[in-house]
Image (tube, rainbow over all chains, first blue to last red; front, side):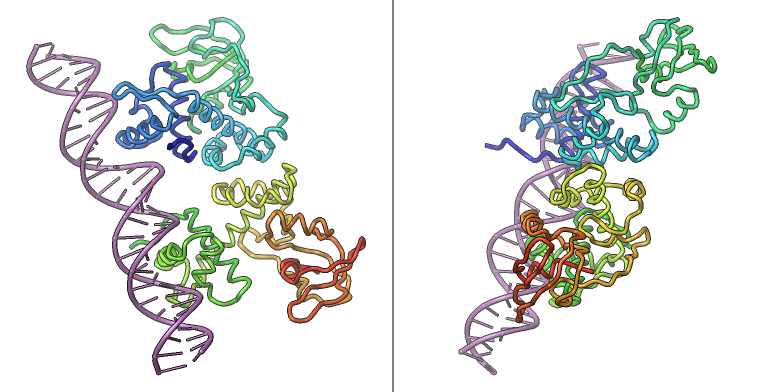
Length: 221
Length: 221
DNA sequence: GAATTAAATTAGGCAAACCTAATCTTTTTA
DNA sequence: TAAAAAGATTAGGTTTGCCTAATTTAATTC
């Protein structure tokens, strides 16, 4: 008899975190990973996970991890959609800077109504990418399919264009910007060291080494 | 030792409600009035009022009522400023309608950062009035002073311009709109019945009677 | 001025989301 | 494979902001 519960802020944050973690590992998501990402105590996550499972947003196998159900997936995607539209709106319409919009959007994604988000989206011209180059799902929660690699997987010696930089801290973003690694910039991978080693990158301006950790965050076409 | 506490949503709602109630009565504000306005049980209001008083946002004389302190006043004004800027932004930039923006703003005023609100304000051209004609305080919380009356107090037989319509429900706003009573519209009071009775109003289009309750919500220049 | 009514307050509780500490499970390692 | 370490869960507690019911204070009215 208990079904349609509060779509609270916490709920959305958990589902979004699980979605993002699942995206990069493919496995069931561990409670500790969620705790780490949301900066919440493990025990609290266990408790919340239990509730979310009871209410049908996720599946939970104790000691094994969690997976989103269709219902949970839908909410996660919609939350991400909101987030990205808000980011883009702040950058394009309010002329805010790339590295300050993430935190704003993190708050607003929970309080802006669908109506307002959709108006923003229309005003922006119904884009399918946000300022980091991340895809924006459409109204039905579908992403526009794209063929992309991270720098860590992309072919050596080929001209590439940066299509996306996954969430990084403002400091890291500024570092990358300093190197000329921004959305739509062009570059070539000259060499890649083995064992997850650094990459040798050439841009129109210069040549430099990039740690593999960063390479995994940069998507190219 | 307990001083700078959470500037929570509830806090802002209470201070704003007290501000608005004080504005129209001049007296200390009763807990029941707050309860009525916020749709919260009286006992809950008493409890909250106690906390707000302890923390220095209001002064509370038990059984007598409350008044804002300078600190509480400041927060109330800033919350109202946010509200009005958001409303205006939604109307002007997102082309939303007059009667749907209030509820949106009611939520967003608590989560939009000062930085974003100020960018909105600049994009709007630093206005000093919102779409209802209500004044928007500037960054320091000062209102631009204005000489205005409600229809209930305005002189008979003189050409008036509507400068403000105080918060009314969407239904009521639509009723007024149907009569041609919108922001900046012109009209004349032909006659006013005694004992808080109805007014006889003439607009360029027609002539009609208006209940005194509505007259008190309409400000004119 | 005593009795009724209205308004405000106290008392005791609840739900959401956290937390810490203690107790399992599971995995790793010697 | 037994012991140690890592990860997950349970148990019990906190804070915020709300609720209902009971009580107290103030204002009205007969």
